[in-house]
Length: 256
Picture 1 (spheres, rainbow, N blue to C red):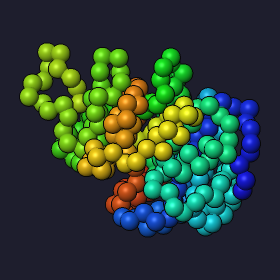
Picture 2: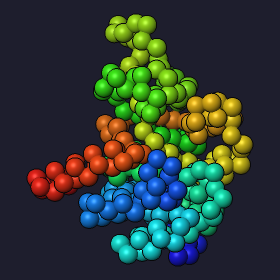
Picture 3: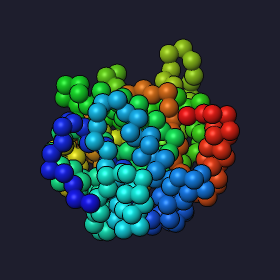
Picture 4: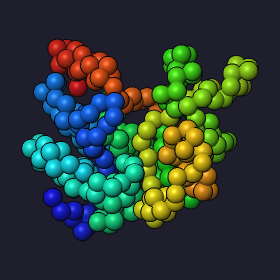
């Protein structure tokens, strides 16, 4: 499907999705719940209240066909992209919205209201990139490298993201910083997005395998807001099985 040149909205939400995930091949098209996984993500993104245009970006015609089967606007993008953000940028270049949100294609339980939180931050003066963080409720997550932690300055801008335990809990209480987990959603002002994808991977990004460190390494400040929704991507078969069970429980109790 071709992208529209213009939109009445000023926010573009792009959901990047590809079939080639190493730990869970074919992830977007899994449908043990009766819906494709990527359809759950689409439904969540469309819960936002900011009037955003929501687009699915994929490198595979199978995902394109699936998206069109449930009424999603979908765009076939290049197969050569290094990351989902590069795929988001390709769609943004075909569009005109000044604010762009990267809504991860493996976050089927992250509510669309988080899009609104990210967009609200982007509308603050001098903010070019935004994201959110949630309380680190499970103490064991502090040592879990799959849970990314973030620390910020007094104005709410990111100082660092890491898979390591930050801040190190040498002291707790009495005004000490409280650990927070990063939620993998990003908002960009349009031109900041294009600058970001033009930069090569940064040494810190390569070391931690965290794309957002490229922004910090190049002086692009990231505004970090607070959210009550920790998210939790689907990366492994075990993650997906647990998600399926939660969906079945919600369906049985009339949830969502």
